Length: 215
Image (cartoon, rainbow, N blue to C red; front, side, top):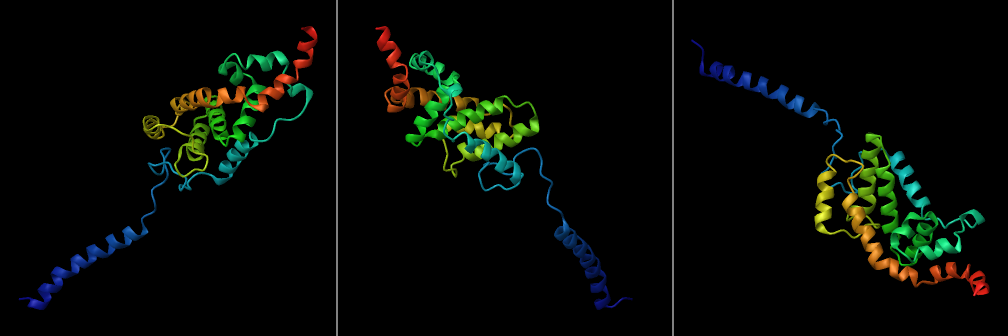
């Protein structure tokens, strides 16, 4: 008949045998592989799971949009084109030279991020590759939507919540509502001031001598 000590060993032995494999397997468990979905629900700037080289390339392309327009004959809008920008904001934004002049004005008002965000959304909508869409959508979020970004654009809570939901499965149209809101903001707020600015008046004066001679 087994002693009390032997009975205790029979009970404790298997428990210890069960514990050690589970602890070692827990310690050795590899991290879950990243999926196409965001690695964190907030999609903030602190995430570092995306390719840093592509991140730098994207931001370099965005920063290049901040450079002054080149001074050349081919880039100079005609007097008629400049005058057409006062007819509607849509005509201004459809004109590459108009967008450039408006962007330079926004820079003086420290709100150029609005134009950069709008341009980034246009670029995203033209993207057909889903992997590129995922990357660009994430970087747009980090650069212009995240509250941690110095270039954060002004969006209401409804639009922000919609973006957060859509970022679970990004598409080329993830930021459509936000882009429209920023477009409307520029139209109502910055555009009237642009038309009265020295920037726009200087462009109008380039065609003034011809019109004054005709008069």
